[in-house]
Image (cartoon, rainbow, N blue to C red; front, side):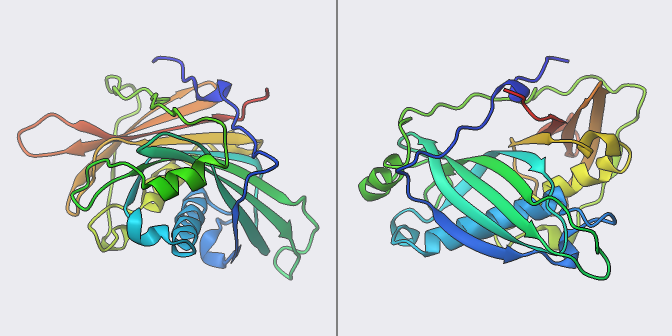
Length: 272
């Protein structure tokens, strides 16, 4: 398998002069695992929430309303757990005329309760998502002049290009057989899109067998390649190499070979 370049690319910081949007979200018990850690699919929901809240707070919900995510990077530097309130700050880290890298920083001041009575270090999660502006037909389209001006004021990179981080081609099935992942009605949004959080529920299932991968600071990279429609049959191919785990979400259609719908990589956080 080709080595993943993602670990060698730390996320950029926010310019001191860059404006940002801020929102707070209360951690609920539905967001956490048995160890009270905020799950990765819950982080994906926070990212969706702040993206929606951000655009609704501007005039661009009319001029630039339709966005799709091509890739999301999540760096868990210090895990967030319950009870806590997450403060999320969102800004544009880079852009071109049709897409942007939107950064979100999540911090959490941990509290205590009867179920989690010991003090914990405050949480810190850094994220970056590659968003593409599309028209009502789902085709990439140019940002409005006003949106480009506003977003470009937050950064110095205005010629953002797409470069895949994950290996798209799945290897041949290995000693560990592919497993089927059952999709549920609640995994889909009103537009019949598989919710971004549902993709990371796949990873959370795998973490049960590889808990050591999230014991320290870690990064995940998910790239969305093809839509997964309601009623689809999905299997998961996975390869563990040292402290890295790569998943291929394979979409099965009648009388056709499986195709890769998404890829997920999980490994250690960059150190430089």
